[in-house]
Image: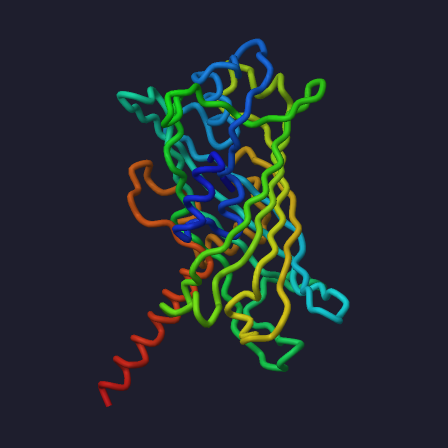
Length: 314
């Protein structure tokens, strides 16, 4: 869960912002007061603080975020419905990089999962009965690999010292970030500007922690609490077609000490279905980022190709 406003908006335009994913690689740029230990007023200190929030000061050390909450419908003229419980995780690591003009920095690589669960039993869903259409559909959970960040350096492209965007009060720090998303839908065609269908969503993030912990140079990672809200179009696997309405998710979580601190539900899903999510991608991962919508398109294309190949044998 995950950059500066420029990086976030660039990723959104390139369809690289995810459900959640993006959730934990987000940093804004604004000045903060100087503190003891790591000096947040310098570019070097700001990068160190950013890296402690997002991952670790140690290269290639896996860091895990975990969160959960609820997903609701919003349809004009109807009361909102609780559709699912949701539970997510992101595993990431960072690697040190350098630039001749911008100095030392880091790059973050990650992959993430978001599970949709029965709102009454908490069981991970395999199928879901659509209350508007009456159709029973297959549930496609979010498995985005990779969800990587762009490099963060001591100096910006304009040569100014990098800054971490924090609000502070007493010993508390927090960041509140709103990211409007509006870009060509991966499931749409080339004529979306004419006939509509552009992907439209908003991601809202809160990151929180203690200043003493953040500026402690003796700790390689910070204790962080997170909140994530997403409002978007219907999920593609819901098969809502052109029906009016959207879906919103309200969640909270934190950085945990390791894989073993994930819930039993999440660990069981990883062990059985998504074993690569025990570890982050390699720090030199050069693949294009995946979103829940681009993953769904890839999945549908793979299934169509498999059907065509099977039919060609008969």
